[in-house]
Length: 147
Image (cartoon, rainbow, N blue to C red; front, side, top):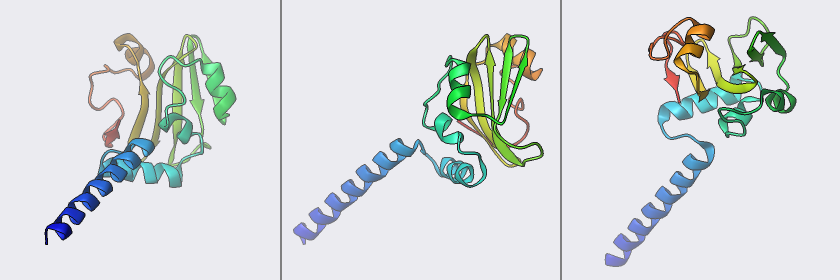
């Protein structure tokens, strides 16, 4: 009986270690995170993986981001660069913003969720780009926001 109990405990520990490794590797730490990960895999352009697996972080050179991820639309306005990875009218996609040539905001989105990859906007940048305070819980709308 002790051997069986010891084997069950070792099996449970091995399963938890494997689960922890997979969660860390795929950067999914909750059921909601798993749902957004699978939704991105089904709905979003392939560039989401570059952001999700942190190839690009806050402060990344936007020209490098453009070169690697090949967005469908690049809009330059004064000090801002906006990247769009989906066709107009899509119900899901990826958007990234850079200020002074550095990545400050990147997220995947759909009508039901938002997954933030990079959120390094200052209060002033948030006001300028989005027209709302960075502290405003509804700055991305009313859908759940996953980090």
